[in-house]
Image 1 (spheres, rainbow, N blue to C red):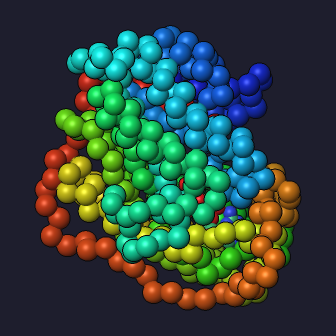
Image 2: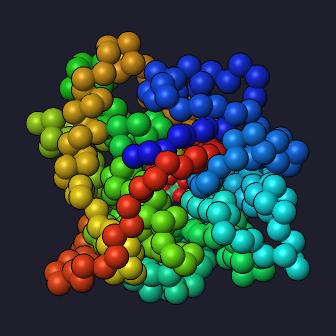
Length: 364
Ligand code: F7E
């Protein structure tokens, strides 16, 4: 693709570095921390990136109730520090706008900002009503990115990404928890998977498709924000059914609901209207829900036994802080999928990668 990719790593002896090296050996690393303004300025000075992708966050929603202040610092103020690092290193001030060759900035915004939705499907104009400290922090980062674009003329954009998954997803998120659970049950290591709210619905897509959208967004003539999602939504129950069926199992024999995984405030249903991305970027997802779930179940079933055999019991680190008192019990329920219009796609402008560029990614 012509990219030289740098990743940001924090902390001393960060154990994730070894894992990262095994996955993608050719990524170069620079040390910095989203909590430390000076370190970000040094990192931008050292790498001299053409593009910066801020994918870093405390991104597990239940964790954001347990560590609300840290979530605000990293997921919210981290965006400010990164934008400031780019602004300072580029010599941009209120009276001096950037010239050509400026650093382009991508902010990973999220469908969690829509939260308790006021309309469905959600597009770039749908009002935000976040339901967790994570969602609130992301709204701050989203508006700050817009503000730096408007205040300083920076090429700074947000992708409002709906849930994007792959076999690399963390085991605490529901798709991977289910695919790992199915693999463990299939291989005889466990008999049950404990889950929370089965009636919540999400618009789940494949992470690889969403990364392509990020790249397109930074390759446009003018910066703008885009909703990225498939336009098809499924309940957690449907996810569970699809995953267990892919392994020839009946989910009702193995899934237990556990209030430890119910959130204090839930986002009930999300569904993307990504028509702006389709029309202006020429973007559309290539991998659908069934294919994605089968891919994740297959990958986990083929993991080395030691990785598959690890316990999936709830722990304080991956359980939600618990339902509000008086909250009604959550029962499995079915909802109708929300579909986007898929026919008659205009050709749109397709943005290619092209050229040799330096991209910095911040991930936590
Ligand atoms: O939950 C329900 C849970 O944790 C999805 C992050 O990447 O996407 C992700 O946020 C749904 C929720 O993802 C369990 O209550 C039921 O309704 O996989 P999740 P999320 O909260 O939607 C957005 C776009 C982001 O930006 C976030 O960073 O599944 N659910 N039972 C469960 N969820 C989990 N994790 N574990 C359960 O046992």
